[in-house]
Length: 101
Image (tube, rainbow, N blue to C red; front, side, top):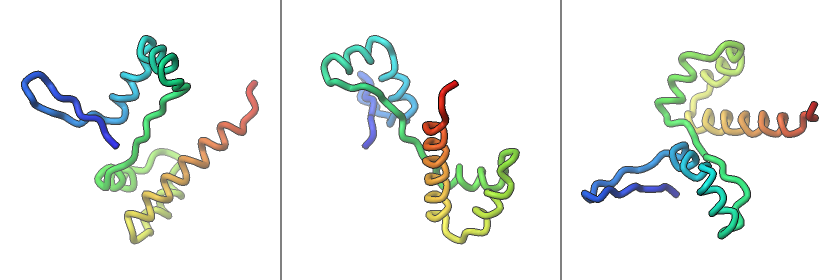
């Protein structure tokens, strides 16, 4: 699913998940969503393009060398996407399990 913005001139452009999220996160919009549609939270769902994945694998962030080394050895870009998505879910689960101070 995606959102397209159509200007008065008829030109259209596809909005990113981040742009839609930022719009829906505004206080007045959040109030309307919760009042009329019972929406509690909005989250952007983003992913990596093949080019972004290649750039990530070519320039690993500090401390990620071992993980990125494993990913570089993978033959299929699809497998790398799955691995990164799973890694992200595990990180989120770990954060949720951490007791608040």
